[in-house]
Image 1 (tube, rainbow, N blue to C red):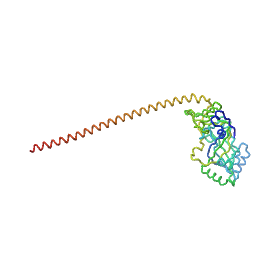
Image 2: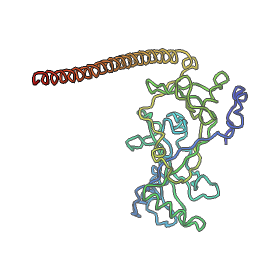
Image 3: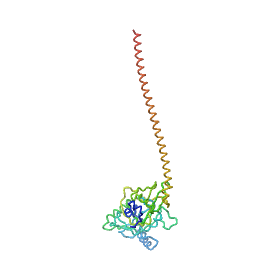
Image 4: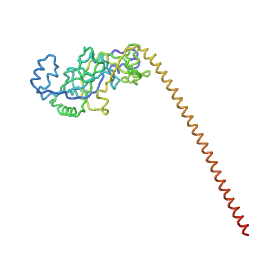
Length: 340
């Protein structure tokens, strides 16, 4: 584990031990089986070719105690923990997963395999070289590995993992170790991630990061931790969590863009614009609420008038009935007089 530099303001915020303890990040991804070619002549040809990877050479070799797996180790962008993997730093760490262990649930005493290759893939699944001129900013790192399928201590567990892979329900959790980090502010209007360097005058932001107990928000921006100068560690095979969408390449962010800025661009201009827009929205809300109250008052007035008219009508009907009864009595009196 690397020693991450810690600034005075972070110590004052009581984050010394927490930063030391949280100097790694994890990502969850799905596990699959790569295509295997059981053609021995092809295997021999691959072994002779220096341009082929170790995984390519091992495909098809008759070793029943090895099971090949492949998974997306990480993708550029934000993950669910608000950790941010930017293109340059991620490419620099591209080869570091090789030779790292594969275990069950990040338990170091339950190692069941190791990683043998790592490659970069576009979002369309095409491989590209780290030094390619037209390399994308949004990409995945895929790793290939082998499981020791006949280890007596873990044979049953590995068999269950193989079944899970076949069913599409096996996942891996990656770890990386970093020497430092920066702050990423996602602009809510453009989606651009603005990167602010972590130094003495900006270290007060650490306490706002979710991984260190904060809310992951600052001045109206989403706040994330940008991984710097990191290496990938091993990976653990884990069960499918309750929310499947949170693990299958969840760290992807299509068309992610990044921009380095100074802290005053976060605390001044951008925030002022947002404050102005919030004020305008508040004014519009107040006007709408006022209009709604006027409508409710008018409705109440009409209801009152309706009730008054209904009352008067009821009185008029009663008067008509009373007069009708009087007229009837008089008619009967007149009839009786005439008869006499």
